[in-house]
Length: 501
Ligand code: HEM
Image 1 (cartoon, rainbow, N blue to C red):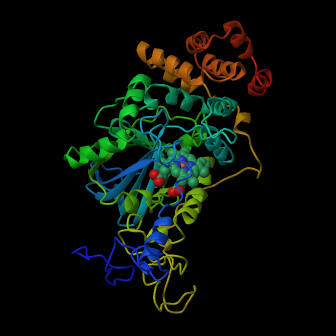
Image 2 (image 1 turned 45 degrees about the vertical axis):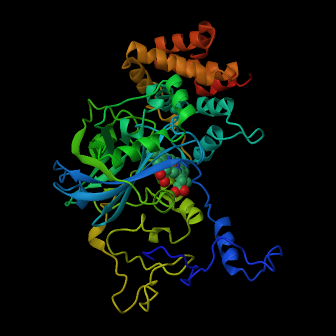
């Protein structure tokens, strides 16, 4: 193998890789050219399905070093002081397909796989602290709305804004996407977040709720629409190239890791649903606690093997880290493994980039592409009398008391639900030039859309902040008196009043 001499798929030498086997110099090709058959058959199967969303992405290896002591919150070994853990990260855009340009206005995916001594921990996040929606039922719709129209095959601003404005809980995320943060200069120049509320539990089995934040040490930097258009005209791979070349040059990007912590008691009394992924936890109430430093320092050797075949799954946690009642997180616990069993096959965790760095003893057997020894002659069943596949009860999470009826609750009926307050705070925290760009980016993005939908968005802006609403209405050429009038409706009333174009 090391001298790169060509062989067939089972190691026999290939004598000729240029000329097909023909009957006479000008004659037809013989079916007996088995090398040609093997080569073409493999080639035709080289494309695997792209990820349903986050199809365009780039990866790198690095490590997480823990510099602070948060052992009072979690017993996870990966988070203990001084610990250094290897990791693989994949950054992505969301809506674009595998060939899309990097510098598009979109949120960015940030999936990290920590190869911990207790198994893999995957933190599959984004570069925003919240998400567009809060019930898994809406997720297929989001993707269909931001991807291609079924008739035209084109991206459709109309579909996109219709969907977004029918879900007022998307307002904060909409504002971020239309702000400077909607086009980061590169992956290195953005913060990223776990978004959901997760849980920690410590060695006394006391639970805390937590959120993860990773703050860029390269400085936040963004592109305007014009700058991004110029970048895309010359380079569709600008983010991937920047990441790869920085690491090749030894300019290793870093992020400081922080957590926010909420006790179970605080969560019960919190003025908003702390498990609603469309809501932030305000940092003046739940301050950032420093944890450590994440650094990227090595590029993959092979894009397909390591980046395309990488599979991240929020269901992969380690002792000391757990989930929360966040409905969207709960939905994701199913969706990722399911997608990967389809995209890569049932044994995708045997692919080197996905494989844990500790021995795996899951007792699963067989299936396509089983490339290890398949647990040899060990018993295939549990329980058995031979001490194989014994559970590890010392790792049981603390019980979580729950109450209530089994029902399809609408979060909009929660009297504490406010979809606009935080978006208003975000708007007011912007400088004047940032506000101007937010308004003009939105106006440009929404310009092909019908007026009824523009009114819906302007009303949401108005409900968040009067100035935001007035300026949005002016930029979209809307009647501010009508915006004011419409803002008196509840959400159902607003939808009804703006249903017709
Ligand atoms: C219920 C809501 C969601 C569902 C059903 C869902 C589902 C999926 C699926 C099926 C994939 C493709 C997986 C694969 O083929 O390997 C994916 C990719 C991804 N999702 Fe989600 N997602 C949801 C919400 C979110 C949220 C809230 C975040 C961020 C906090 C997020 C971040 C990502 C990232 C970063 C990737 C790309 C992973 C990679 O680089 O391979 N998703 N999602």
